[in-house]
Image (cartoon, rainbow, N blue to C red):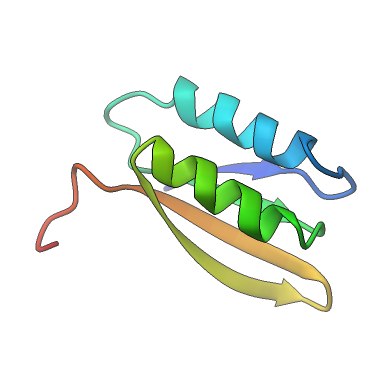
Length: 80
């Protein structure tokens, strides 16, 4: 199960900065991180930084103006 980082109520650059810190702390066994945000600009900044660290981003709308970003480690994917 993915760890969840809730950055609702925070504005740039904090959602991206907290996400990068959390990704860097993931162990090799941890394949993904889920980020919940209500700050639309984070939908651009987080995937860009996650890709630089080797993570793929899937974005789902979680409600009116909330999004769930699932960041999955690319190097360990099977069938990719």
